[in-house]
Length: 137
Image (cartoon, rainbow, N blue to C red):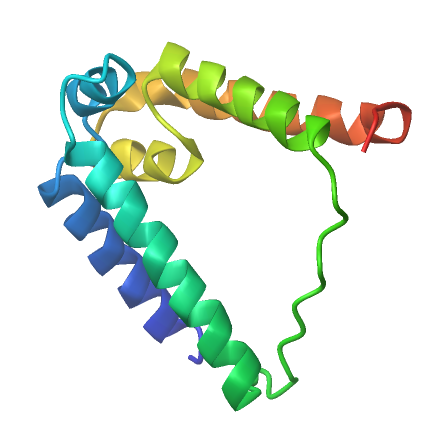
């Protein structure tokens, strides 16, 4: 029963992203062609919200839904790992026209062809898990 509120928030979030056209292939295409500010505005708002949210979690020492303190582990410093990872993520996003979250939203809207993208994303994640120890981090 505790998870119902998170499920409802997820549904509302999916509706908001759909209405804001953040799951639209055309909007994503416009972004990668630098033809529109629409998606950059959405991403910038998400970044700003995330920064504020992390600061609130740290300052107020908030707990998760099980009552345990939320600990945010500092990331290792690095340059190439973020350049390579970001480039691969961006290429995948540009090729399929969807990042991981909207894949599920598109499935929910009845765009079942995106199931191929979901399978590819899961396969890529699985392969990364197999190769993780051999990759530079």
